[in-house]
Image (cartoon, rainbow, N blue to C red; front, side, top):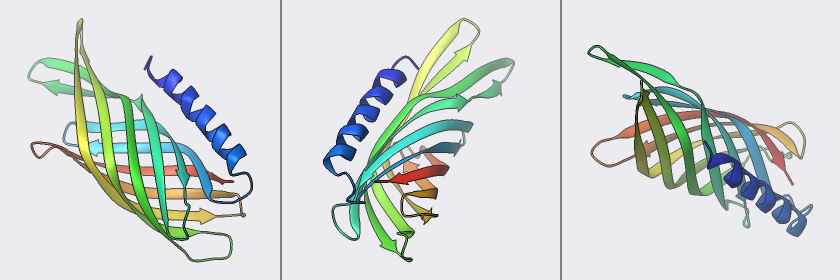
Length: 175
């Protein structure tokens, strides 16, 4: 969690600089929302910030940063432990197909994702991670030229058959 705020500050600064550099071109997007994480290890919740830039009509890139806000208590034998997301980040290529005059679109994305976990049981703590290929898709529904809603699904495939499904709902600002 301590790592989150400096990184979030860096993303905010990057977004401000990018918006100044590309002011008004409509190719930049920022989003902020909730991501539900589902795997065999538990169901967790995260807040997620994204920044994307689409230099071409259909092709773009986006980065994301998340931190956990909803943990889960798991029981193994007689031991209970709390598991939660410390930090997650990813970088994706996107392909978007617009379908209305406001810029609403259907998109697919593929890239690299890392999710870092904390596990606490009494005085004992441990860390884990899931990292690997992330792929998925979704829908950006724009209510105005600048404001909209993003609904998205992403699957993260890790090593040794570890994987997770994420579902996200976010506010979108295009600038």
